[in-house]
Length: 288
Length: 324
Image 1 (cartoon, rainbow over the protein chains, first blue to last red):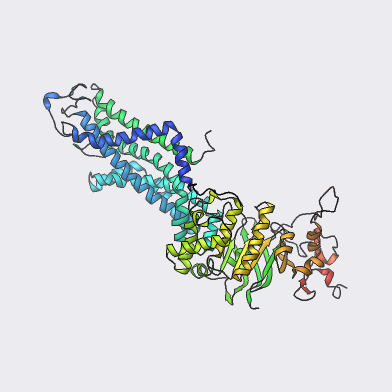
Image 2 (image 1 turned 90 degrees about the vertical axis):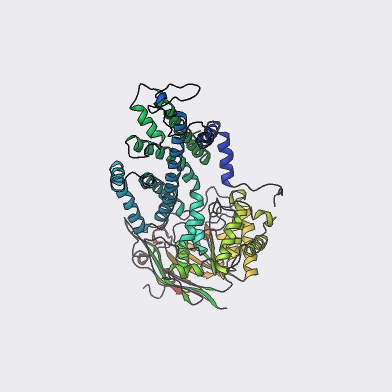
């Protein structure tokens, strides 16, 4: 027998992933920036002297100055406050839509992949059909039928974003399914549901985490796009996409596009870097 | 001794795009309680598929016929729910590659206790105590701490011990070991085989040991089935088989074991390869490789002849009366 160190702490694979991730400085900085951004958009409106829907026609389209850091829009509303509030909406939409995508996609994909056979074919054809629906058409249809509604944005975005996730998860599940430890779980008499819940899904966390960080920016872009088309959030509530859309209609006031745009780009960039960092940490052999 | 497992005319076919693959062809054998049965044969001879059928582990494209009776209960055709009650509880299995047979993201504790909670209805706490006992039984030092470890923190030999401990948790009547030592180095192999032998005594289990290592067979089995291209060609008690191998294939296998006092440039092998399972020919599957091949071997599969107590062989050499 070999020597055994009693003090040694057990280290899970995820702990190892964490320690590799922490070594990736770019990803770490991006994660830090993201945390700051979230904190900022949540806190800043509380301390702002302006309300996001407070109009002041005397101060219409004022360039950035000491009182209105990001300037004001055509109705004299403070752009800094509006950018922060728009950030709240954007992050909220991203968060909820991503959550829907992760839950639905993981469960759907792992069941299809693990059970296989006709059920897999059926479930994946449903995904194919949803895929082939033109998204814009779908979004416009929802809005015309149910009117403009905050929840509809989640439904519209959620309905498309889980499709990719379920495909990724299904593929991963199918390769996991033939691992011997799954066979070992089968022969120890575990039911299919238990095997999926206890043995398949924990092994999927890595790829799901990576894919989630890459889903968030997609969702943000989609929501910004919907807002840009006037299908998303309704005035005076705002989001980054809506702010950019308003600003783009009025290009003489450059700050109206610049600031929300900067925030949006920064967020997207950070999410992508974090996602890449996670992917590298989970698969240390690649990208070296 | 009572009969534990009775396999009768077990036939396994796989339907593939290229045609039907005959993996196992009417295999029959009996396993008594407390006995160790060795199934030997080269890669692709159908050993693993045979136990796969017993455990209900075959892929969807497999067609199984015949009968597998465990403690008098027919296992073939049993639905998943009933099968789940038996496997893990009364029949357990350990695998060839201990490196991949444990879930890398769960601690040993979670993987072990799960079996006990399921089959014995134990609480997680009791299950943990029982699991630690079992880890002790397979001689894992510091079992109390080690149980909280993840699989990658164990060496290959240790992982195989953990697998054995997991298989023993419910004190099964039958343990199937599918090449349990193939992935381990020789010194660890001996430890694991000794451990299996000890544990078999202690828990009064029967064991099916699948291997292609004749040394392992000689050391740990009571009874041997020699399998070739999906057919059981010879079965015999282990001493008899090693003393007087009857089937030319068995003779070849035993002849291929390198001996210390031989001073050979080359290792002895059996020339040729396994026949294509997609297009089996009519006669004996070993005919093409057999040094004692006769005309009849190529056209007709020999039946079984009894060669002494508990012993039979399928070879035309022993049908002297019929081959005129």
